[in-house]
Amino acid sequence: MILVEKISSTSKRFKSFGTDVDIYRSEIHIIQLIGDRSELYISEIARLIGVTKGTISQIVKRLEAKELVKKSIDLNNNTKQLVSLTSKGIVAYKAHVDYHNYKHKEMEHFLSTLNDEHLTTLKQFLNKAYEMIDDHL
Image (cartoon, rainbow, N blue to C red):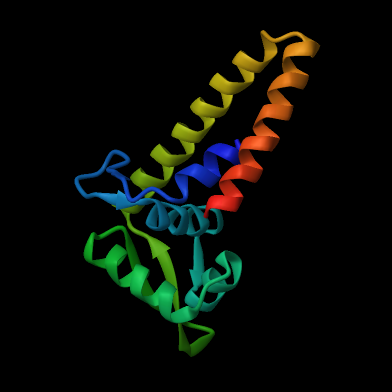
């Protein structure tokens, strides 16, 4: 799954995740973070993902324009804004979670059909492929 994730991170493709808008990989992973926690500050999202607040602010603006997230003033601290999912954002979040659950189960089923020798060979191949991808990025 790590190899698939590494390859996917270079893709500029998008999916709709059950909505009427195109959602890019960077966007759906922010939706995932927010959905897992119900609401977050932009600074928290930036810290969790490891990018700048400015980068997250730009992505959040795009998500707002697509009506996937909304910002609101934190009642405990009027200087901070919380980001939460809209109903459309919740649809995308659930579709993304379902997609990953399905794909993980599919892979687990495939791996359960392999004997120990095949698993060892596959693991060696994947480790080598991972190293090669890392060298080319």
